[in-house]
Image (cartoon, rainbow over all chains, first blue to last red; front, side, top):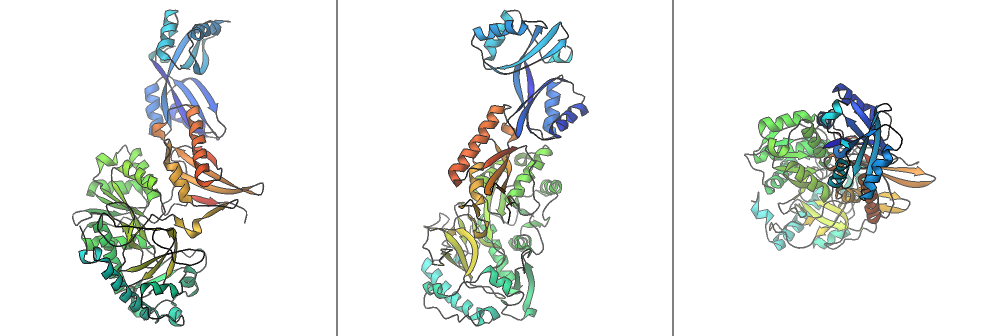
Length: 142
Length: 426
């Protein structure tokens, strides 16, 4: 099981900097980041190598943060890979609530992070089709 | 259970009789002060006749600065308290020894009523000095015999240090500061429920909502009691909630209580909302006849379950001069607080701003989110923002711009919270 950190922040200069400073001070590596804005505020989602430690450090500094369960799917870094994956999910009527990706190794391997509405089904379907789902521990090594 | 049983649960008829006698005595005494000398105050045959007496207003106190209300020789006064006087002359109030004794007795009676006893440890976080909140409670607590810590406001870590080391059980605190203090407990990884012996909070000096009281009670695991007072008639101790927490008893042996229509000055019957008017019955240095407090409330009809006969008023809705007029609509800041503090997801602090945009008034409400129940989705936040907007619109009939803020980022105050900022063009 994996999760990323979801942070409430006001949309103003310096706010994101403050968050990354806390991570830097705690020697935490950011593997992926995504931002969603609702105008004057937004949500920052962070995928980091040491989730539990990062969560504690952010809480300590009074950051409004929560853990969100996710699936991290390893895919070939090639045309059509995401399409193939979405075929599996849409056939089972699984909706995505949030999604972003990052390249692990250029032209070879990429990872897709999803927040889905039906976790056991999504996870089961992907494992059945032979997809590799990353765990928290693997985030530090890939 | 009662500090002065013979007064607190006396028969109502006897109380009115005593008040009529006291009113006539105080009218005679007030006539010795320059302000009342030419007001032709007369002897009353019934308490109803008090409606024929003129009002005394805050402006009168300012206009007669500094000695116009003093009936005694200045050498008999032992203390003065004063407002800050940011607009014109300050309001200066003198006390003789008798006044200090009476005031102290009122505060002790209030504290005893909510269960404070000699074995309690009382931490007074209110400001000492010209402000009456600190010294008023200090004297009352000492008279009661409680160990009193005169720490004054601010320095939250030190406040917590004293609470822990001396087993503080009772705290006198501004409601806005109570919330601020809780966040310092959190920062220190302490839980006031487990890590202190706190039992009771006395909250006052700022109008606050029932919702805010309940929030303070659940955060600290204590009972919070609403304190009412005003420096013009002494300070805190004028009225207090009993353990029923259903209205503030005003001490009718010290004050004659009226509620009037603030526009016409007509007396209103119990139950109707209007401005509180007090006649001091035992003030020695500066008696006040029909003083208009500016505070809006109503008398709660019926008997209190605590058996005390002294009239209860509802929590203060606001001062008449706190009222905001937004594009012609009247509203009180307390209505905004009552609404937003009842919504899950709303944190501990908020700020109200009024600005002029395109020649119209625009109301901005900044609300801190509650970090404990943040679930991490944008949709939950936009829903919260929308819900606050809708509920406020239903309550105040003005559509505000609601802005969500991170916890502990809105301004906090060491003294009274200044949550309303009117930035409109004059």
